[in-house]
Every structure is written in C-alpha cells, then in structure tokens.
Image (cartoon, rainbow, N blue to C red; front, top):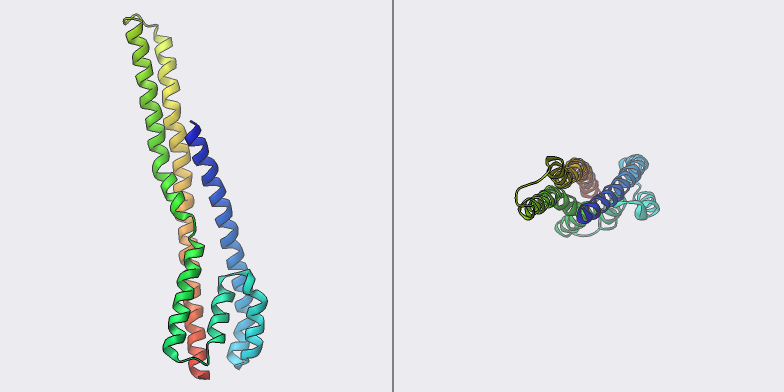
Length: 193
C-alpha cells in the first residue's frame, strides 16, 4: 500500500501542476493574441515586440511570437527553422511529466495485483500452518485484506489515466494554437520581408 500511496501523491501533484501551467499558458496566450492581432495587421512591429516582451515570462506563446518578430530580418529558411525549434521546445515543456502520469496509470493496477497475490499467499500459508482447520471468517478476512490493494491500485490508475488523456488533449490543443500563431507570424514576416 505504501508504493500505491506514493503513486497517488505523485499523480495528484503532477496533475495539479500541469493544470496550472496549461491554464496560465492559455490565459496569457489569449490575452497576448488579443493585444497582438491589431498590431500585426497594421504592421506595427515595434509595438508588437514590446507587447510580447511584456508577456514573455507569462507563457510559450509570448516567447514564440517574440522569436518570430525578432527574426523578421533574417532569411526565411533560418526564421522558419528557429520558429520550429522553439515551438518544439515549448511543446515539450508543456508535456513535461506527462509520461510519469502514464507510467503511474500503468503500474498502479499491477502494484495492487501484486499486493493481492502476496496477501493470498499469506492466507494460504496460514491455512497450511493450521493444517487445513481454518475458520472461514479468518480466511475471508485475509482474502478481503488482500483484495484491498487491487481496489486501491485501480482507484489510483483510473483517475490518473483520465487525467493523463485530458492533459494530453489540452497540450495538443495548445500546440495547434501555437502552430497557427507561428504560421500567422510567418506570413506577417513574409509580407514585411
């Protein structure tokens, strides 16, 4: 049960931290994009750069847009490579620790099953030691105790798997938003360049 408790604590910590990071990235990204759209349409690059610098610490979109705006004077191939590299880095930062959620969702039921099997082994050892003259309530109590670990493992794995897929979907949605924004910055830079 101790490894299952640790899995539960780690899972909860990762879920809460990732929810906060994704919420902040989306909120700041939408605020930034609302401020930037008009500036980019007008071609006011200096104001757009200043706007991004204000939001740079607030999230991946600010860093991506700032990189795109600062590299407008560079050749198109270099700009595209830089934007793609930064986009990949930002997405990896958003996906940080999600692999651990998947791992916990995979191993929690196995840990529970391991606890059940070891509990059943202990119950059968008790039966053997008592030479088969076992009180049914004593045996039922041992089996009940053994099955608790399976219940605990599944109780941890199911919400962890749901959280993993939810967070993965949120990262994918934000990644699509970053790609679309990078495309718009690229197009804006093409007209400027």
